[in-house]
Length: 519
Image (cartoon, rainbow, N blue to C red; front, side):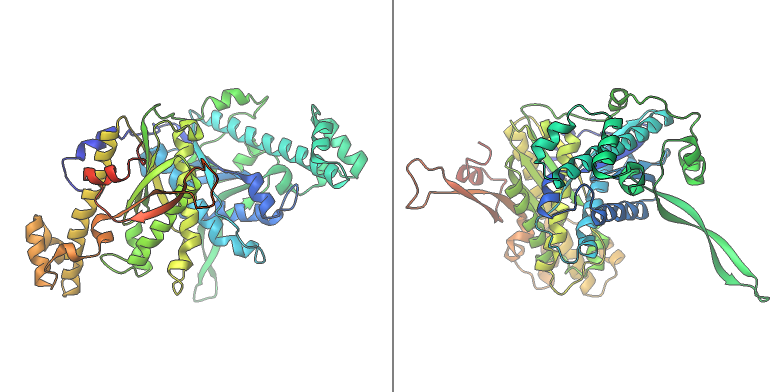
């Protein structure tokens, strides 16, 4: 990032490292799953296709990130367990959580049509995520036992609920019948009234799904005498086990023993309050501006694979802008956003209570929603380009105590936009003129702004300021107030639309023209 007088704002960023040897677990859940399942008419109490889509997402997460060695999921939830020695993004909670939830979301949207070819994805799904910091293998064992127990209890309850509804009861009546019932009573209800032996229901519904790595023997070639030559390779497999926290299950899978270690005993009574004490939850300081900064993961590669125009691809930038507009339309507490290249910063109002100001929830939900929109809007901006692989973004939350410091943060990002764009414009002009990338870098090393302007003049760009303003100044997204229409009732509140402008947000004049943004 560029050097400027605004650099001091970086000092407000807090590193949220999960210290070794704590084990890292990331748990993902759908943000509004009940509504999502109703709108998309999922089968009750379990939609097998929806569960298999979730399982595929988990499988591809393990494929993409080798540091994840095990996952367990049911319904709208999945937990991902990292190997004990992981240094994935240097163990920073915000980056670990946001990357995993972003990639998971990206896969979910991308693969939707494979599982629901006749169903349109009616709105962008989004997931929340949180890190669980397990102080020992025993804590991890109890955590997994807790989640599988929750799977069983939830599925048994929901099976009873929907069988009662299908029999003619209203949901309210069914809930009243089930109020205060215990496991055995629910089993008897299913058997006596509906002829269902709960134990014979599909394992995936009762026990959830595990995705883990196994070693598979492959024949790689044959010797001259026809003898097969075999080698072991690592693969992913999905299993449905009765007790994922038991020693016998763990001991069957060498990858778990190698990367995490073995359990010394089986879990007895589960103390959920004890396990909840390990949920890593950072609450953001009250009465401060919250900024959620989202960045593309490995977007240099992504832009190359998808042949983005250099130094700026207007369609790619407009795609990012469309996602930012959607974020402001979805989240009322976001009052302003600023973006450049593969980065966007979202400002939440000072008194926001969104997600009770819990950092991991805010970051994960916004990153997930942004990712969802990026994948869903891809075809609108690149109708002739296939999305060749699932993009992902990371995010972080930073608090700024005053409006002045917040504006300095935004100024820092716009200065960075200008410096980087000027550099990149020179760099790609040199590359297009025949220089290699390393030669272009050497040519530009140590050059100042005036030297770059002179270099651009040699390529026919006499006035840098004549380049498109979006490239030079980035994009600002905010709500623009409009007066009520002529037929509006007296006292009607103004309505708002979200707009994208490319303007100078460093100068005081912009904020004077839009006093309502920061209040």
